[in-house]
Image (cartoon, rainbow, N blue to C red; front, side, top):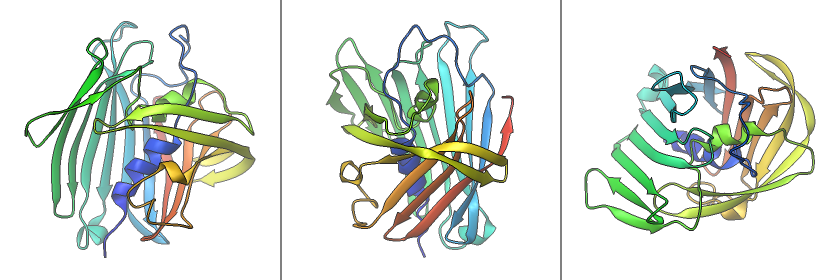
Length: 252
């Protein structure tokens, strides 16, 4: 049994996105120390938890944002497919582009250490995996990494019927993904009951486990309040159905 935990990273990466990112936007809906904790399940089986957290080196506006995403399987899932994956990134102070992206991945028999440095003056990013020779990918403008777009989406309210497009780069390729914003719905998660908008990407732009699922589905729901919290994430892929539900929010 192979759990689709890696799918969660890509699910969050391509669903939680925004479009117009202005350096003039100084009122952020998230804050230093915010911590979002999720319960993960594969079908009806609990398989672990995930955490999103935001920090800074100093409590100053001009300092870079530091983001962290951690996925951990529970004891039951560990027996089949152990996951201890940490994803992290660094964003400029106005939150307009990624400066650094990294991943310490332990998933089953896969162990991978990834570092990606973004150089907008030289118009390329440098991708290094397990300390091997770096790979360079051209940049034609500002991009967000798969983790930072989780927060970039929250900068602006979502409206039913909106379509959003954003260039995203994981160090190996740049991918524009189109997102459709759905209608408002009542969503219940362990953290509470909220009115939320759904967001769904065009499947043709996705790869990996999603590309192998002709009838696959990806969707996330964001609260309609000023925090625009990612409440619920659902996917249906070739290896099964995957769900992440918000359980706890700290320091909001």
